[in-house]
Image (cartoon, rainbow, N blue to C red; front, side):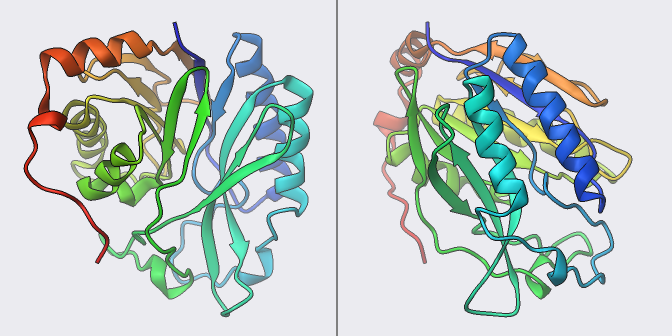
Length: 265
């Protein structure tokens, strides 16, 4: 068997101290289940729902208060952690929607900067954030390769395929999937679609309501939901199996049969 992973969800707010307390609680809860990797939502550091609010004064460097907490928790609980925050951009007056990938030793493994900004459904994330350049951010854990993307990236199948081409057999998707007509269905459908078409696990952690859908889940390479955290604050976990990936890819060789490549614009 492969690594034991957990998705940990909560409703973030503009109270950074409360957000950090929730992260501390959920990481400890996930570690108690035996998880080796804990995935927290997008905007775990600071979450504001009003697209007109200027929150540049709330941005932090990667090694700021939030990033330092994530590193300390990873080391304290002996778990790898992926968590979303908004980082200061030294080259502009905007922030960067960033995922921290921290190892179980507390060391920063890598960062992922959100490529597709949420300029949809009445929001304009690009008004206050700078998009990252397309880059396949992957890391190894428990004999499997994980690739990272964030929220709106899920709507772009090329992003998932870029990660799979880089060797990912599991995709990590932190999100703050805004609630609304058909949005819950889109979230669940797209998570399962990315799993099915790429024959990979999908490990997705979303902010909870009332603003966001919650429904953090782990989906297997056949599109089967093997763990679901529901709508409230909490944790769901599952053990991934690399043999399941190999078996599904043998029966459904869609990656081997493809006739297109993916390249950034």
